[in-house]
Length: 479
Image 1: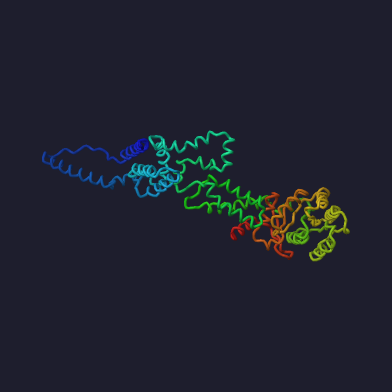
Image 2 (image 1 turned 180 degrees about the horizontal axis):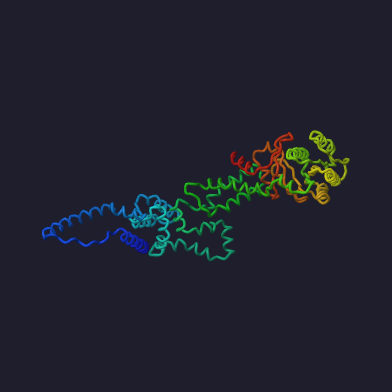
């Protein structure tokens, strides 16, 4: 049943022994002439006794001289102890691959029998020796006798599946059959990985951890489509990859979450201050967003942030529809000692911001900060006004402002405003009240634009540059 395996490993054994004999055999010397016949007889008797002693020593194990000779050539003898763990793991993988128990035991017993007492390089481990031997051994085993018939019988359905048309394969997938990756995973590959202490990650072992991750994202106010795409991305990246056998699918997913979240939440990040320095003055920024999310306060905070970095600014009130809007922004301008451009209530918002640009050009002001009405994303006429501002003023940066605690509706609002006048980034207010970061993840994903600032309080200094790593670390620490 195992003739092919025995022949191949036997040849390997003969080759190794030949090499070892060539390296360790003592050089031949001419015998000294005997002094007398009596001495020759005595020598013969002593020689016979020595040979018997040598045979007994050889039966007990490798002699000291042989060990020393092998050590000098960088080799050592393979022992049963160093093969025990790799062979146990191989037998387990064979059983998991539906190999009958007695067959799995006989495979490992034959490998043990043929390798114990052989030589290996000292820099190699028993696992490496096993890994090299497994592929050839298994190919020989499954190529002969009854075991070949058993394997062919078990593989018959898989062979038929491989010959199905593309339509049949899709139908089989819809019926919930195993994925092609799981079916095509060869027994030899599983066994070879087992010998190195690794195994292949399957979709089934990731299912539970990924479902839990998706649930946690949804509970953290991440929009459903975004949560699903994050988990799909992790699944696609991990299935078919390898992991250490001591790790679980859950541990592997946990390691992958951070990278996946950083990819989503860190999209499009750029150096905000460098962008201002590289843009010809005056740099025109327009702020958009729904009513009551803190646009005007965010403008005041950014004016302070710019001042601390040596940039002057002028404020423009394009929120001409709301009663009291002029008074609100004028109050901020007085506290910050900033110039404010306003028109009467009901005026053209685009004209207000345009006048602010002309003032900045005439007075050497570095940045124009333009407020807009709190445009409800369901009000088409107000969205049309926003499009007009974009055409007339052609701002260098359009920043979308929303609340970090806005929940999944932040996703819809971000998409609406981005469609009306393409945004370059977002500012999230009330970030100090949101520990989950769901809005940041959703907005960054659906717009493909970066989160630039976080409002963390009511003071003018409570504005922070957004750092994706900090947010991801916070999310994972609280998970």
